[in-house]
Image 1 (cartoon, one colour):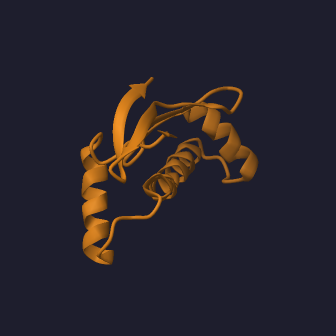
Image 2: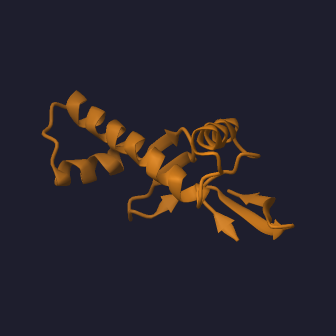
Image 3: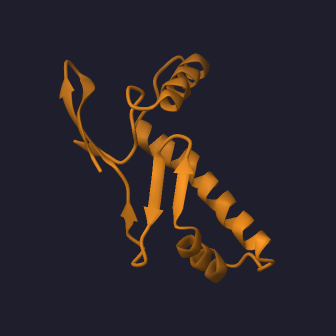
Length: 111
């Protein structure tokens, strides 16, 4: 399988996130990558709003879209680096995993 989000074995912050989740919920998060994407989405929005504030531009959908292509690259706490291309596709490392003994096991990282 593939994932655009690093696992706890790839990124220390993800390990701490999983540990905190386990402590609070007494279980691992279901669909870990999805929880990472939701967590990090707020950081993208924050960066875009700060970008518009610095330019003294109103926060509108059109301006946020424009800011996305002006900022382009984000270093996110749980999913790492993310770059938006001019055509709105993204550039991001891809993690290749396999399931062994009912656990995800990393195989390789494609950048």
